Image (cartoon, rainbow, N blue to C red; front, side):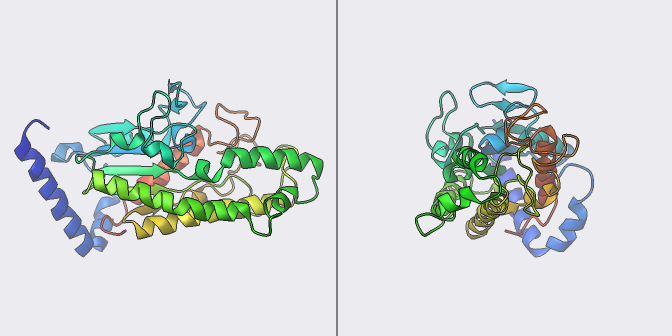
Length: 304
């Protein structure tokens, strides 16, 4: 990017493309579903892609791990998206354990994730919020209680003991934090296309449990499924209100949750059989999320 003229021309071209996309979305959908990358390198387009996120993004345990501190895989979905979209530059800032706070604060050796976003950035994917709501703690609590009352719904009762659903409240309290992240992304990269990536289907969508493979009580499966759907709906809503697009990864992963047989599942249970972290996507789960992002990028470029 040494030639300043080229940068401003590129920015102008991108603005022009955005306007055209808004006007002629339908025509563009047809054109952009061609198998070629959305930004073919040969046409002088650059695609500077930055991925922000937590462990569902970074792919702990999935070969090959390229950052031990963040448990980041070179086969996480951002790496696959960068490859398929022919990204000119790609920065994967995702880190296991990240909350929205780590967008602004360093996490061990990982700099604040927003530092990766600049005026040159064309595409930003954001998958965050699970740790703000407390995924890890929830799984631990529900597993502990599930063993004591496998037929009941001890986890749901515990989280609703105060008279209101503490997990529903946690999701609501996370919404303004997600909005703040998206505003910060837009401020740093005014012309970037921003996609918010939802969380994949972790538990059976029909609410039927699989104790002891996943040691939650039978009645808690539906409650935890509904909690995750609530989180994804919040992410979709906040994206819509903050100039971002939403990528649904729940729908495409139904039927591949952690209760399924090893050959069919894309999310590993609490004792993984494939290389992945407990209750996290395996390589096929990351692949499915990558496909969902690529499909969204090939859609209507002007639609928020």
